[in-house]
Length: 146
Image (cartoon, rainbow, N blue to C red; front, top):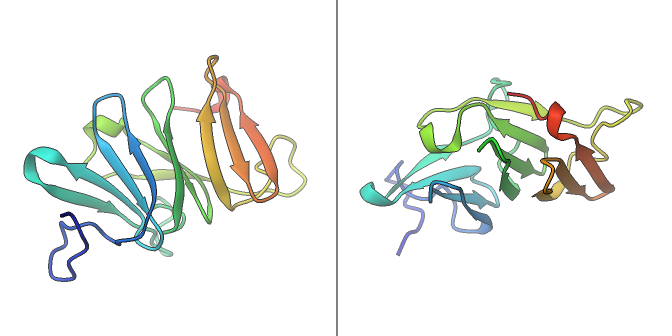
């Protein structure tokens, strides 16, 4: 059984799972309630952890991960309780990663409706749909950046 082990930094970061996703390459991603994002390495039976760090703006924006999705460019998007995150390397090539944060910007047209992201989906044209506590936002395919 795969569980958190306080003595093992390669174990699952937190036992309460809030999101589970298998990407195009068969990599399993696990979002947790308070432990950030985990990438499961099946061949090594261990996890790589990605956590929020208040002092590092390139880290995950929050450790409560609710939603995971991959776009048509194989970019992993992470919906957290503190905003939307884009992993800045291809999901199947990452051991260490940086993240770009997309946060609520009141008054800016097309900005996120809220930072509490609950659902993510990519449509057939590549648009990223973002469900939050205050409604739905859409990031057009050409603006997802890379």
